[in-house]
Image (cartoon, rainbow, N blue to C red; front, side, top):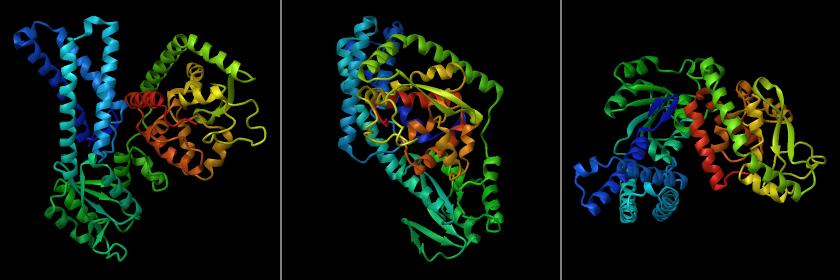
Length: 465
């Protein structure tokens, strides 16, 4: 794995996506070359053709992204994979047809267009089958040893097993003493006892990484053995840090304050804050102007559908636990909580109006929050703004919950796009793990990734209640 802009990227995933882009580009170039019998000199004299090929490549990869074909987990269902690929090509055709209708000069040629799509489909299927073979057989994986048999160690193994794109191969567990519960093998992986054998096992197995996942390190950490491995060029990685790296969340129940204090991250420079605020202000101002006619139509629909005001305002907690008024389009009946008191929304909530169901599903009810962004109470990307009633309740039960208020809340957020709507304390705990990861690693690149995923979530109508 490599780290760029405070984000972890899996090398195999990057190679796969970039390689697929080059493959698509090459397929279109090949179709152009064959149909027009162009030589390289003629192509060189037509620079626009390279941009036309790039347009088809980008449209194809965007379609693949929206069909979940760049998701982290790789499926074994070849029928589903083939269906999604065919659907992606179909969507690409529609996107390009619209672009060509609006901008005829962008068209590369009718026959090139259709033949390119056929070649692309063949290349995509072949490329993805090859990728599945490489990841399943772990041809380019790095061998790792896991030190300890804790729950964290087991969680790491499950993540690696479920995520073939991680390209890690767990060689064995090494425990301090013989663990009767584990036996000679555990979760299909061999178990060795005795920390004095770490360096020997690492050398014999050609290990690249040792993951330290002990329940208690004080007095149990084999410093001499780990130092011997370190000076031999083997990476020694803390288990909690490794879990953060591969999952994109922090283990709230496992980490202690010292780990947070000494770990990388939580950088909030004045320059970064200024740039984030500038981007938020500019985007909110433009968004409010562009969406003004559409918002007026939404307001009319709400008014015709049910009695009550168009907007719904509610007190929420912002940065440093300051109270502010959050604004949304009203999606529930007036007086929805008069009898129940403060409660989270549920599936098929009877309090939601007919128009409310639509605007919540498409996240349209969130549009008025651009005013909160404009006034500096919120950001476009950040943790979900929560109500004081729930904050006081959750802060007593969930460790580090108050740390989520060290940044401004967002219209969308890292936790919102990676975890479905939560209405329980367990969900709040899970979302906090993502929120803390965002706060620890926040950057404009991460914000951009969240916004792209948000667009995908809205377009596909996922996760709303």
